[in-house]
Amino acid sequence: MQSSFSPSDRASARASSHATSRARTERSPSASRPERPASPAKKTRSALPVQPHLRNSPQKNGRGGRVKQFIDPSRFIHEAKPVALEEYVPENRFEDFKVHKRIIANLLAKGYETPTPIQDQTIQYVLEGKDVVGIANTGTGKTAAFSVPLIHDLVTHMDRKMLVMAPTRELAQQIVEEMLSFSKGCNLKIALLIGGASMNLQLKALRAMPRIVVGTPGRIKDHIGQGSLDLSRFDRVVLDEVDRMLDMGFIRDITSILSKTNPRRQSLFFSATMEPEIEALIGKFSHDPVTVSTRVGTTADTVTQNVVWYSTPTEKIEKLHDILIDGSCTKVIIFDDTKRLVERLCKELDARGFKVDRIHGNKSQAQRSRAITRLKSGEITILVATDVAARGIDVSDVTHVINYSQPTTYDDYVHRIGRTGRAGKVGLALTFLQK
Ligand code: AMP
Image (cartoon, rainbow, N blue to C red; front, top):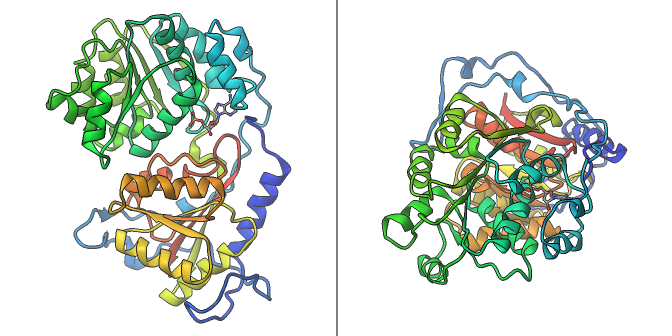
């Protein structure tokens, strides 16, 4: 994985931003198929003055949802900065770490040739048994940074057990998939404990005495509460994306879960940001931790951002259509407010011939995973999602994030656009606003 920009990244960001300023071609809402518009560009307005109707009147999000914050439109406009231009030269090769050779072979077979910065700088400390605080951007290889040394630890110490907590079902699932590939042939059982999935299957997985448990705080706590999970012998603990777990209100669950793990544990904390609440949590549950920071800029820095103004619903969908038919839109996530709106938009885009699927709270975990896999594999190019369902999606090379509805808060916005512009790539985020 390189941390520099390629010319094609820049070209694609440029091409995409031109898509926003394309003239809208006339077509009836559901009839036409995706195609290139015949005529080019009339410019969309950008950075307009504050919209008077938004200034003092916060909007309601659908029926009784969270009140929408007023966010100045200028905050949705940004030219991506080429951060981390210089290529990172790792100090170590994977083979240099004293890690079981089966794990190294699995990494190489997966195509991981050199460690990413967070892996390069974290693995040795974890192997030494130190508590680590890793501050790194999303999508920079944190999973292997903690999994490789801790799987080695479990393979070489039969009495050890590991607990990994992540903010979302999708992220937890991805961590398990990665761990399974790193630990192939090592005979380690992993249980995945997430909401929205069969409790019976999870109980069965727990009865098999897994040495690794990965899950979201809510479901882990449920299992502890009903006596199906005893954490007292879990002495390796990882908290991934701590900042987002706290954002999502998991602080009490996390505190209660950590207090039930083995007091002589090794603890690792990964976060893209470091705030007082996170520091307090780390202070309470770690012992003399080493901090490794490989963060370059904020997530939003690596994303070119712009707004798309529209007047009517018809103009809105036509502008979206024009953006989506641009050849650079190869992996797009579109956010909308509610399950119903996500369903409606997905149907509309499907009728227009786009390859599209959707995820929202009414979809089962299996359906959500299938939709994400379809986006990853390129079977579909567009995934329409609600905020909650989309948190934690790790699909590399997302070219565009489109906010078809304005996010409720600026924090939500940053989370949404963090799905693109990952790992040194430039992404593009467009936010639809009504004139
Ligand atoms: P993560 O931050 O762990 O979710 O990883 C982000 C993406 O980078 C995933 O798609 C990984 O498969 C990929 N990745 C992680 N480490 C490496 C590596 N050393 N070499 C190549 N790809 C990697």
